[in-house]
Image: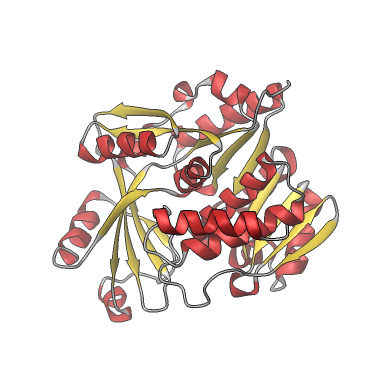
Length: 334
């Protein structure tokens, strides 16, 4: 199926991020493991809300896939976001922000609360995410807009979608539609604990369904039991046409059709907040693909954007940093 223009369609957990700074001992008091995402229930959410009630907080639209889709929208790419929100103030806020970001809104309202993620930033800029899915769990295969999938150039989703049966079935339907319409499938593993839960499933998906796969160093290590991120990227590249392993302050590695590219890190070595860095990296890579850049250039754009987003609080660019990132992309000899 010929595509008139590049469109990125995503299905994801639409969460309101509640970001606050804490000390290491705070995580110990709450029995939280630093640097991971965990799913929490309503009771524990209330405990965390009470814990941070007197702390300074930043609220923003979040969720791994939405962060990527919104960043692409802000960069001028045509995007569509599907998911489920509550008929509440957080849900209204999400709709309003998608309109502001020029993202096509295919969010569906329901009578459950909008999902949220309470994110604790520690002094090392690591983020510990406590996610209450709520309304997101109700997104199902009947909520997938078939025409939107078919007209998209890229379908983007993350490993978090495998945590509920409804969402998993929605992704499976979208994958079937992608095969029918020649829509490329882009998958971000997104979380080390997701790999631990679904390693064999993710490997099977990669072999049968995925065109482009993102992992970070830790996720790739868990997947293959190997400490070497370059070697892990080579292995992933034998499974998918394009594989990317993000290697922290050492940059990233890309395998594309058997060729290996090493991408240096860009931006601050002293990040303010790493929330959304991987999501924005994926946005940069997809931005490059949508604009017909080479694979190595896509990696550099991804690195530029990830380097900029960590210099601010939150996973959506503020106006100044967005303009700076655009200028860097335009001025780099890429």
